[in-house]
Length: 362
Image 1 (tube, helix red, strand yellow):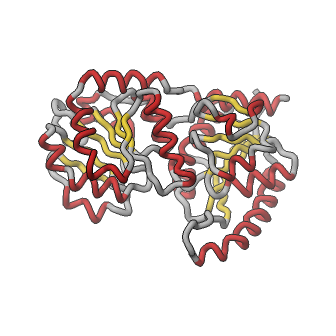
Image 2 (cartoon, rainbow, N blue to C red; image 1 turned 90 degrees about the horizontal axis):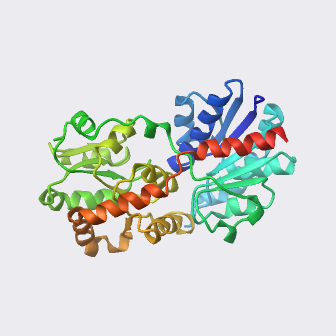
Image 3 (cartoon, one colour; image 1 turned 90 degrees about the vertical axis):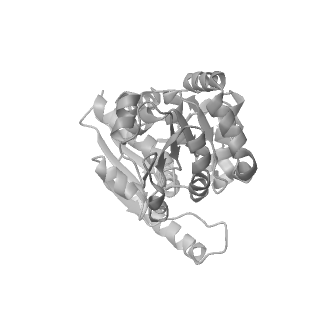
């Protein structure tokens, strides 16, 4: 395999960043001489996470268009123009063989400029309902790597490759459940609920868990609760011997191994990781995302009887009934775990790299 000069553009949330890092790490394992540059958005999560993983990143001055009235919207045309010019400079200087976009603010201008220059681009779409940017970019993309069936409703059918979403390598470094619980200071013999509100945390899920701690205790559960750094000061005093609260957990292998039940947002990256685990999950999709795509991600699993789902509007009235049903019915737990595991695609990064290599060598 020849060394590849690859630009990966995407970020904003872990759902865009971690698949990008998984692709980069897979390529480096295959050929250490390959040169990889990340392009993200200034001030966003990728500017911290990518360098920590050992890769170079350049930030564009770009942000999303706010759906509500905002001064930031007045700056959007100027940011877009500057980002387009900066993208042109980056592409001319780095001279990539291929550019892959994993979504997020920066991927739009970078991939569009690459397409204007006639460079081969690949879109990696994590969600079952893609955003406007990827639908627009798909017209000139060489390949579109997706995680769900039925994506020909949004993209040109002949370009679609069903690869799944790349997941972090942490899933291959699992330890025993008892050891993981012990490391969190919990009782290894007690059932454990893991709560994940996404990489940035979830205000609504945090409020829910705080209000339901007595209910969860009556179910015999102990809790590991990743609340997000923005919310940690508000909830840290709620911690106890049976409620472990962290702003962010880096050792995700231990977190996942400790879990008997999981409550999570329905971001595409989270769903892909949860599918590899094969554990019973209750999904609470965020309604504050583009095109309500987390709802559609969750429904894709519900249709396969691979997860339970509750919308935020139903939490007050239905959470206790639905979650009690999950905890108390071992048959449902077994079926959900088996069905979600069946949907996992641990070789997604490898399959995307195969598409990159094919484009590069042809």
